[in-house]
Image 1 (cartoon, helix red, strand yellow):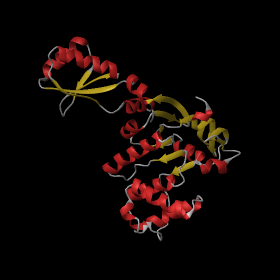
Image 2 (cartoon, rainbow, N blue to C red):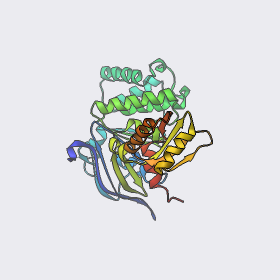
Image 3 (cartoon, helix red, strand yellow):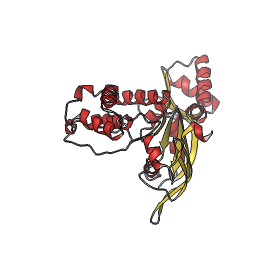
Image 4 (cartoon, rainbow, N blue to C red):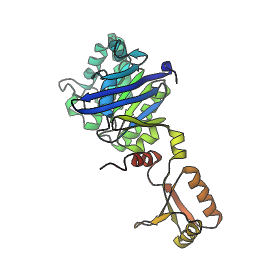
Length: 308
């Protein structure tokens, strides 16, 4: 992929904190018009990388371009194209919700009319318009998260960095967040999102970058990941014995679950689909058949299986 096709292009990024090497030559590409998920265990280097991309921390070495700007020589220009939503952020409790966003609209140089229109647009988009006159300190954790996302979008950034954006959100708000992030990518933004909620990342992301011990462990397109990843599939049948006999005849690995059903595999999606077709054709009356966890979870667990 050409650099001008990517909102973020990073190669060989390193960063140490004394004797601790947080990043060890990490590579990353975040294309425009897509959502890229950053996945890794605690301590893998995700937050360090996000801080570097947000120009809040300098790397020891490596090449990084954000929205086409080299962070070493043009950090101010990069910031103008960058929206940053950290895991935790400070708010100005003495301001109302609308005043809080207006403050950042002013800071980014929007004129008063444009800023006012943008504040109303964003409050509507993150479902906080009914709270516009309330002081920030009365917002719940989830409402503050949505306000933080609105703050990151004030200046219409081309590149968006989201660190655990779903933290504290209720199920409906998570669905709304997913739809909003997808719409931002559809509008052309390059979105990089870090989260521990793997099932939700699999629903929202076009591609995944796995980070392990400060280095890139793999990059996957979601469609390819789902087709190639091997995982368990839980099957429930009206009569379990015919299912067991059919699996035994194929020497297909499985284990019984205490709550009912059999976990079969590991299998890829094509293998699971083929097996289901054969079982149904043999008359096994299966009424439920679904993956146990997602493809991303299977890859992540495989990557971290040696962790102590």
